[in-house]
Length: 368
Image 1: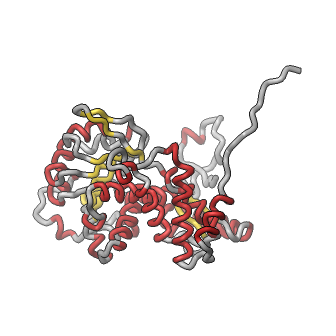
Image 2 (image 1 turned 90 degrees about the vertical axis):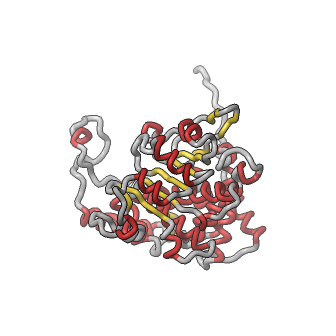
Image 3 (image 1 turned 135 degrees about the horizontal axis):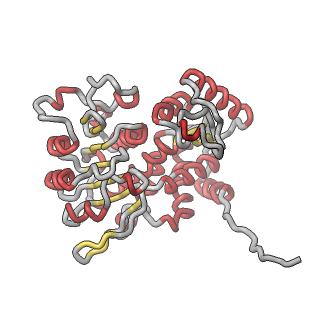
């Protein structure tokens, strides 16, 4: 747990607050502290796998880009979320007998999570034959000022890479979400903005008018911040949308048919990535390793394996799924040259050896 203070006065004044009672340190001091911390981690555990979790938007991507080539690390909120969403999207595309490279994807929310997912979608499109510029031309980010274009001065570096030329919106009456949907005619819409209900009936119906089977993912959580609820999305698209969410939702019953709703939970991804890295003694986490995790997850989707059901497998199968993901991640690490090569059998044995079961002894109360 990294505690660099807080500017929340209510917490600072709370006698029960357990954190450091100090205003949040400035950026320069913060960066210096993180550099000192990571240097200490590398000295103490030279073969560490460092997983960044819950870092603020302003720091998440810069920290990842600064250190990803110095030690074995990944950011679960950026890369883990991206991997599970891309795996879900792969499953949806396979169910529609399409490729990711054919999709036009609108992201609602241009923070580190949304842009992290977008960058992973770009990698997936490139793997299917598109150039980087072609892939980026099929990604659209709608944020506070509408469609993200390169003339918006507020953007951070990781956002500018996904901004379009301002000429794209020339002649539009505005750049809001509904108009972007009408102009772009996306096949996929992903919500990561935390704005409850922003996927309105008109927005969803406009999207459905341009795509027979839209993929709609309101990923913000908790449930109170979801961009839409699955029941509405199913009803507004007459049962034609493929839906995945960030929060858990019950199956939707519409016109006598039951629609299971997949939850894009990072628990599908980070245990398998960690297990694969440890089993293979990988020295880095590469983009290709993350993509292999997404492909392994997509293969487990009931909609892909059985032609019906959810876009993601049940979490009750997470142990077996994690081992499948771990094998693909470890094998990809070997192909990338960041792990020593072993035979497939040995690799599976290493994965089993690195796995453990949280079984506890049964206790009973005893009177003295």
